[in-house]
Image (cartoon, rainbow, N blue to C red; front, side, top):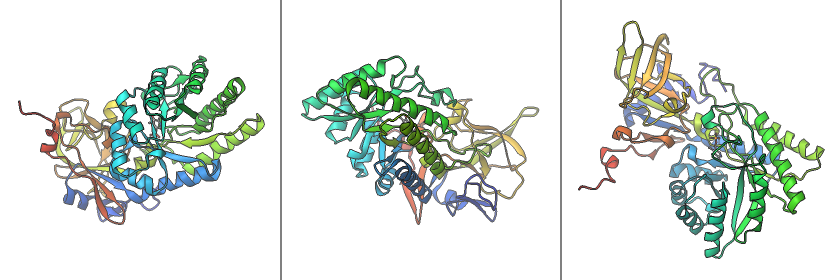
Length: 438
Ligand SMILES: *Cc1c(COP(=O)(O)O)cnc(C)c1O
């Protein structure tokens, strides 16, 4: 939703005197208090989004439908605590995320382990900690889980990840549902049917259903409806050939998020309602059994609940070329422009009422010419010491942060009824803590 009063990108943004507010807090005051780069998270908005997904899915898909938070978007102890409190499930993709969820006291029977190359160590670690489901990508993994589960005398619940052959027209690097993908097994080639038969036959595997994830930052519902049709048809083909009836269909994540003014405003409840209506009528018309539907949003659960505040370190004007505004962070806390040319909205947090007529490129502090946050944006004229706000950084920013150049990672502050440090600022000692003195 656009904030009506001041026309800012999202309704948790505002202006107080000349400063940008976020979740009701003065971002410039927070920058002074905690230092920069500073990542802010709007706790109430995260909780509201989780509730929106949960209630929309239960209303339109049925009570046994539940969202999984795809925690690769932003993983830290507090977010699993919030997901647990809000009664939703979670996806994890590594033992690091799994360990973080354990530390948060997240009930692991509600966790799904994803990824296209789980090691024996990962599998064993997850089983030993009582993981709910594995989302299985390949034969190699299927056999490995069967063997390890057998050695522990259990039957492990899994979903099989399939590629329905959908191209959702997003950036190639974030599109995953096509046949030619490193993820999942293709339906089109007949291989999905083969792996399903193998999964059913394995003694220590408890196949509960199927999964697909077609991509990310998708604004239309048609790709989801098309994927659902193909998956539900496949589930019926499996029933016809083997008698096996899938319990779950996981439709993945991928709903789009509004990063810039030109992106549409998305109503997640309405999207889920329309996808559910489509699935219901598809199943009715074709006399097909409707599985329990799962969805696993990552980006849309946290992206617009986050923003990053930086401090300007230098302004450089190259006569006849362009202007660079350098900030005290960069691709080490937000690599998405360098990776995919992602768009962001940039504001000067302490000059919100000044005219945004200074065209410049926002550059990071890392020793890499590609270390840019955004090119050719318009902000008020800034100088060293001003605060730059980059909006909608909740997803795939901190999660993708690195210590390139041994730059310490930012502090993450959770803003709810009170301010809580969710991840403390890294120090130079942290950055070298794994090094041995030779
Ligand atoms: C990344 C990913 C998600 C989350 O996607 P978003 O676009 O962040 O909603 C969900 N499922 C799988 C398997 C993923 O890889």
